Image: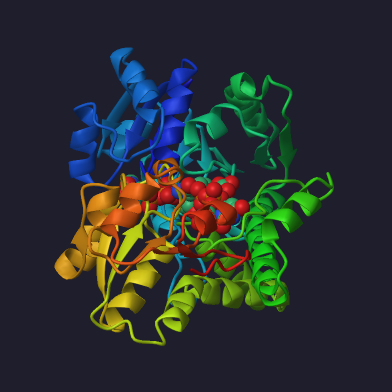
Amino acid sequence: MKIAVVGTGYVGLVTGTCFADTGNDVICVDIDAKKVERMKNGEVPIYEPYLDTVFERNIRQERLSFTTDLKAAVADAEIIFLALPTPPGEDGSADLSYVLGVAEELGHIITDYKVIVDKSTVPVGTAELVRQAVAKNAKVDFDIVSNPEFLREGFAVEDFMKPDRVVIGTSSDRAAKVMEDLYKPFVRQGNPLIIMDEKSAELTKYAANAFLATKITFMNEIANFCELVGADVDMVRAGMGTDTRIGKRFLFPGIGYGGSCFPKDVQALAKSGAENGYRFEILESVLDVNNRQKLSLIRKLKEYYNDALSGKTFALWGLAFKPDTDDIREAPALYMIEELLKAGAKVKAFDPEAMENVKGIFGDKIEYCDNLYDSTKDADALLIATEWSVFRNPNFTKLAGSLKEKVIFDGRNLFETKKLKDLGFHYESIGREKVTK
Ligand SMILES: NC(=O)C1=CN([C@@H]2O[C@H](COP(=O)(O)OP(=O)(O)OC[C@H]3O[C@@H](n4cnc5c(N)ncnc54)[C@H](O)[C@@H]3O)[C@@H](O)[C@H]2O)C=CC1
Ligand SMILES: O=C(O)[C@H]1O[C@H](OP(=O)(O)OP(=O)(O)OC[C@H]2O[C@@H](n3ccc(=O)[nH]c3=O)[C@H](O)[C@@H]2O)[C@H](O)[C@@H](O)[C@@H]1O
């Protein structure tokens, strides 16, 4: 099939690359000319495991190409995917201007039947708005499909190639058949392709993200309570997660969820509820608790130093909102850096992939280090914000030798408390025993 993908962020790039890999002719369109040039030169503009391999292979096979020219890209395409940003507007609701802007343009330029697929995360009712925006100028027949994407950054290719499910929202049998054919190679492992109406598909995406964000937030509250009563959240998690009705995944407490989606989607669903006369009280609490949780490590730090952070230097391991990505959108580390600078402290940061992106925000207000131990050299304490695997098994002798004092504040529970106690560290983590020297 011939496919055009509009927008080459995480979703567009992975969608385009994976559909090319199953033998389709894919052309990706972006308004960012520099990005398009880089991709034409074979460069993957984001860090995402395995994407480069699949990307290169399909460019070589001439199944994957790039352009800034929307009209040329969609001319031959049977299916047009919209993988455009839907960032939070000023009031927290999803900003649909990118999606509806392109939809209007499409109305002007399509010359034969197209299946127009919305892959962006959008509020209920958007498919109808897209239909109206295209119809305003279109002289030919078209169908609209809502096909939300559930991939996770860091596992994007695997999630796309082996999805738990594919959700297709459409009221057109013709479009449903096109989508079924397209996804056949991906759902052959027995995972379902679920066809439903557009509104239910749109809400499925928000409901899934909001539920996962709620699950994490619930565990963060349990962890906070563990600290007060002397329970161990790792034990509680193991005890709960083995109940198959609860499940083991997404029960890891930490310093709050971040990323480009959970924060914006929880907010957008709450807003969409309000617009339709429904108050999502659970989601309001999730937003509040998560905002507080992002600074939980800083609160512990302030308590340890009796609020006197000024003049102190802290090593910070991890800047990305989670491991295996260079994405720093809504990363808890950014909120921590802001608080530390406000308190007059210095920050020496290390992250395997995300430092360039952080330079764009903090510039030379913080120091960027080449490796783990450069960052801890002469630092008063170490703070951990992301669970990169390279942080999991450090050389503790080297670490102790480089820090001014053996003090660690760990927002991701990377180390065994007993081990750190034996090594003589002051070690605070989330929802577990505070180890004091
Ligand atoms: N990032 C993720 O892991 C996931 C994101 N989503 C959703 O997918 C949508 C896209 O997200 P990302 O891929 O993260 O976006 P992104 O912000 O990383 O990238 C969007 C791309 O669209 C391009 N663009 C903007 N306006 C354009 C136009 N008029 N024509 C052509 N290109 C244009 C931008 O230059 C950029 O390259 C959002 O709704 C998001 O919520 C869904 C699942 C996972
Ligand atoms: O809509 C989206 O964009 C995507 O949002 C999330 O994917 P992603 O943001 O890439 O990352 P996750 O692995 O879900 O992690 C999100 C945040 O939750 C945190 N988290 C996750 C799991 C956990 O147990 N505890 C926890 O604190 C992570 O550290 C991270 O900050 C969803 O998992 C995807 O299914 C969805 O497609």
